Image 1 (cartoon, one colour):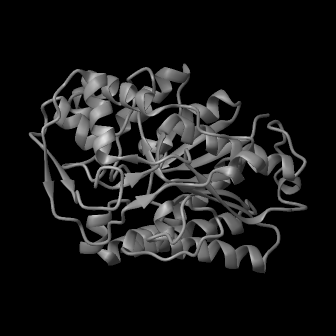
Image 2 (cartoon, one colour):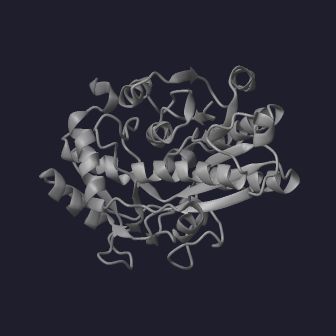
Length: 358
């Protein structure tokens, strides 16, 4: 019997791509999502891509009773925890919403997991926990500080996981700190489909290219970078998904398990992991203007843009040291900026209105 993974937020951008990677790696999956910033159509398309139906449960991670039912009805080995609100600007405007959903929701999930004796978790964290870095590239030992409630919510969950691991050695908790996920599945069937105006750079660029938006605003052109615009570590979402599978494989290897181990009791014995933070990035920085140029060349579309004032809380440069992921997980990002742009354009041009294009 294959190990079964509960994927919270599995209908979202990163979660849906990871569902495909988990299936290809031989795991069974159950998707749990409240569809607040995701689409049932994404789950349908993932099912088509993997050639089998996916068990989907519409639910909120703050709903303890529904979560208990899920763990009672399914032999869950571990949880991939993507469920969370993620818009920085919205978090500044609605901080309590973010703390309620991202922090309180995770507390509820962990309490239900503990009651079910399922103590294996891969958490969707973020490079925002590093704030404005003192040294580049950023490794996992860098100091953590945040400039907005979204980042604070991720950091608060990391502190909770650290404390939990220190208190109960039965827990195996891997926090994957993403840098800037972009791209889409090479089929063009699933990709990033934000509600309303995109908060992230790549979907904004692609929606300008497809004619959905008129012009890109670039916030700040006076940073101490190669061209004055902000520099970030962009990582292809399918590379990111493979990083999650590598984390799960590492967890199993450390516990002396295989994918076919379905004995929940033995699966939670002899933990050697505790709390383990790992960066997922390429280790390379790309400026906003460099990304715009690359996307324009790939798509053949002009990308009109204007410079605007810096946004509060933005930093000049942020890119990862990914050595720990390579050493521990035997994982490294493989896909280039060109491939990120090609796959994003394929998704956006096939689906000009996102999943509403169906």
